[in-house]
Length: 434
Ligand SMILES: Cc1ncc(COP(=O)(O)O)c(C=O)c1O
Image 1 (cartoon, rainbow, N blue to C red):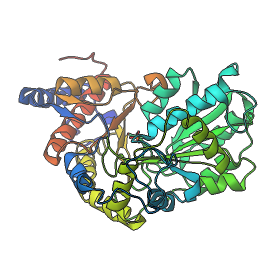
Image 2 (cartoon, helix red, strand yellow):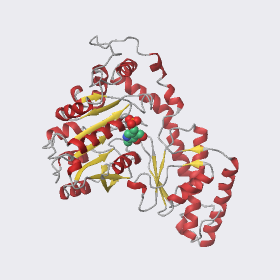
Image 3 (cartoon, rainbow, N blue to C red):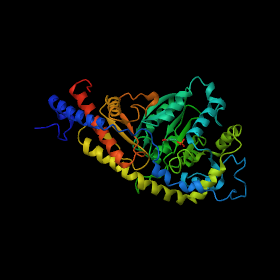
Image 4 (cartoon, helix red, strand yellow):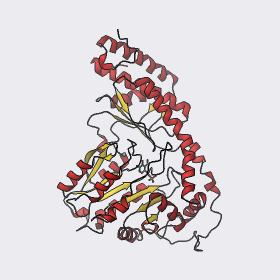
């Protein structure tokens, strides 16, 4: 005999048992609501404890000149400080000459590159993208909401492909890119993807680098935002997309983006761009019309702070000490409350900033609404899809880095309660009740 308190799959429960389960979850929901807490699992921000790890930056740099004797307080040096570029070139596995250090946001560089492609065309474009009848991007889903927002604002259409455990579905990408000349590019977060945590395999990267495309100037926007953000000792190594493209017939296919937003300060870090030498010159030529040089004081401060590439990795291990217990707590609550119930699946990321939760199709928006009532803000359902529309209404992105551990436990209890309540309502055919 099954009771609603068992950890049985909900599909095995009778309507009466589902209603009993819903009642129990509604009581738990009311109890959370009565506490009047304000909890937030929306954005992937570093916690204050993580930011504290970089506070030595506030007392750096110790000098005003770089290695070559240039005064970093003055204009100039559009490529960024060479000693900082050397450190990140090693980590991103690119040539220092093919890497630029810029301002504090890689998203801004992504926007710059897209706007330049639209206004001027790339080094291998027959014409500016804005003169094409239409421009389409391939978007692996679920993906990063701001990537999609950027394309939507610029009038670039989006076609989705599934994200797999090895990166984007390469077969689907290759087919779409080969057939349609309006398909000019794709997004990919290759390491610990936002939000699935997937790591793009060398095989998938190789396929993307070498596949024939109908557009002669197809671009891979390789957003390696989480390149060094390991949560375990099994540190994933990003595929070397620049070497792969330079060895292919499409040497200008990849733009690589990264930043220290989640290494040092999210608002005061340094962003990077790598690409073929020609494409770097192309980018600098346009950038140079709007900038006389980046914040080299910040570059020098970062170079002194890290020392070398190993310094960055050692620093990231300190982040891991703060973050790994939070991700373990998410896993614990989900496992204990939802394991075996057949109404949710989730990933166990080995790096990055997110946990990807898939709930019973048709209930994600309801879960988010219920959580809000109980005092917990979740990323809007559908946010990880173009135009905010998840066709299955199933995906929820959890961002556990920001809250302290004690708040995280409470937040995850609310998530589990809402997932069970929404599922029980749906499966019993009952409409949403207070
Ligand atoms: C995949 C991805 N790219 C880029 C960013 C933002 O990077 P930045 O702070 O360098 O603009 C984020 C932040 O959440 C992200 O998840």
